[in-house]
Length: 468
Image (cartoon, rainbow, N blue to C red; front, side):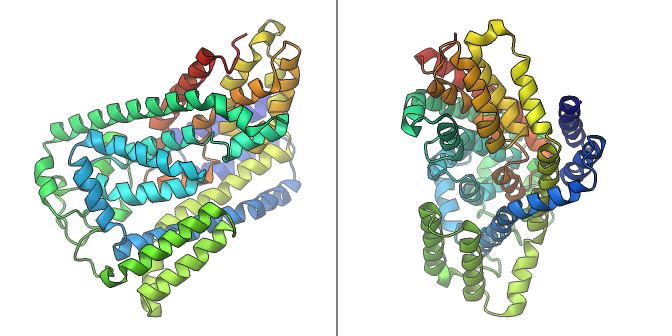
């Protein structure tokens, strides 16, 4: 019963958001609530949800102030010189821009923090996408895929969890997986290349003159930061940018208008120093991340906009992004609370283990790699690595499959995991880029599955994950 309810809840939730019958926030609250009541959660469900809200509060605070801080830095022009440099390097070629986005996300992902990766990548690349008329969905997809591959680094959460759960060395787990990770990165670049080609063809069909766009001073159209992506590579976000879209404001008054009143060129070095210091402290992990963003946001507002009315206006400017992402984080607490309080997550995991035929036992490493895709999408990493993986590893031991081989197989599904609505960093990514979750999922999930299978194939090829 719990197994059927669990999979039914997930299926209904995904169907409703992909068909846009409900917004993600509404679906995350009402669908789990209905299934939780059917499962007999009763009045205790309220307490379970509030417990999860308490656990998610630091994440919500981090996203809240991260959006304020990096939105503020865009307002004051900190990233304008970087965007000019990227524009010169990538030119007006959509292929180079999309591939460059994936490379940037992969490099920044070396710090092991998805939120920082997406903040930097979107801050640097989104203005360029909007200026050239490229779809922001392509940016979120390329960044999401690259970060998903890099999420298996030893200092990242999944690898540490797998190593801890099965009592193996993180280096013994990860080092043999380097060829698999490199194969994944190559696959990301290939996918980005084809997405760039698709964007180039779309722009050519729409008659947008990229050479003319390049001669313009980089800037987005009026209200560019508030644009939402509707139709993927050919949606409103993609066609509502640049002069060719017929925007009556042209390049004036946009989020990166070189004449915008929020620019603070004299404070460039202060803002750059503050940002570098923030990123260094984030990497050192010496203080809580939400606290660091709180302090940085307060200092940035005080120095750049000393008058209270100006500070209120800057916060109000980014309120839409803040409400969208923070509300989704807290709404996800309902889904998580229902899964854990009703024991649906345990029942689903146990059922999956039980239905594996005995004849498949010698192939449990491959089965674990394949299962890691849907399970880490619908469950938290903690639930999968500490709840499901040890059970699978115990069963695999009877067929001579070692714990470290099972641990390697278990991290193959991370590209798919990183597309889950339960991953706060992914919610931050689509919020910063003003991309609809359904649009993002339509383009990223199947690519993430292909990417995980490529990584699994590479691991099988070099023999670090046994086929049987």
